[in-house]
Amino acid sequence: MRRTAPATLLALILAGSLPAAALEGPAPAAPGTTAPAASGKPRVVIVATGGTIAGAGADAANSATYQAAKVPVDKLIAAVPAIAGVAEVRGEQAFQIASESFTNAQLIQLAKQVSALVKRDDVDGVVVTHGTDTVEETAYFLDLVVKTDKPIVMVASMRPSTAISADGALNLLDAVVVAGARDARAKGVLLTMNDEIQAGRDSTKRVNIKPSAFFSQWGPLGMVVEGKTYWFRAPVKRHGTTSEFDIDTIDALPDVAIVYGSGNMHPEPYTTAVAGGAKAIIHAGTGNGSVAGYLVDTLKDLRQKGVQIIRSSRVGDGFVLRNAEQPDDKYDWVVAHDLNPQKAKILAAVALTKTQDSKELQRIFWEY
Ligand code: DGL
Image (cartoon, rainbow, N blue to C red):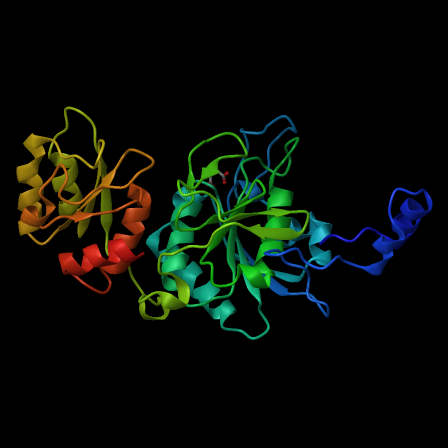
């Protein structure tokens, strides 16, 4: 909770704008919300990777034209003095990149860095600042492989700090509040954007310009408003300490390719991806993950060669039904359930570090 300065508080009370009770300190937490610990503040580490939240534009009117990944983590923190009232914070600069440039090696390095931090007794929560383009993949990857119940909170911004009505400062403050909130524990990796707390597993970037860019088809988990968290639901899928995956045992990820479905397709996008080393194909099919009749033999042939075929959908919401429009049992294909293609790619890569069995793969897609 952000505290009003005592002098201001007294002036407001004398002016009759506030009851004298306001001097008694924070009101007891409403059910389901967080009040700051009575003694001391949570200790939060901000790991910075770049993106627009660290971006800079030439002019305050540049809300969409700017250079991402310019401002270092200590300047990001210094630009939001209110953070000091919420938690004891220190920064680590993992990378300084635009997030479309993330590689598997950088995903693994970041996860190992976050994993080492959450193991420390003097760390209560971690914030990761990130570009919005691929924060949804990084959030899901950390959700799957970092074994902790401590809050790991992704944060980004749609406008650079130099823009009028920049969103990064409040998003960052909110992320620190959530990372230090005890009731944010064991909810998986979270994303704070635009006052909402989204599940890292579910959230996806649906708009490429405005601050309210992120959506979860099953809805946000809660909100963070003026230093308090308000929760309305919790994740049911395996993550963190309930995950069978552990970044401490992962040093590389197999290659997984996404092929976007449309009319009038050709086999080359699939066969070329496999020739380039892909161990699984995410078919971002039309509708219910549909496969054009003239492509079925190509995918069956790739499956015969040991490549996993995973049907997702180019449609944003809903989930792909197994054996509905395609005989998945007969072809030994997997369905991505409600995961969009980019999330399915992350889960497939992580799962393939443990199993090559398509039935095990399908179990993993039901459970995570
Ligand atoms: N280049 C994009 C990225 O780093 C900028 C988008 C953003 O961060 O909002 O993801």
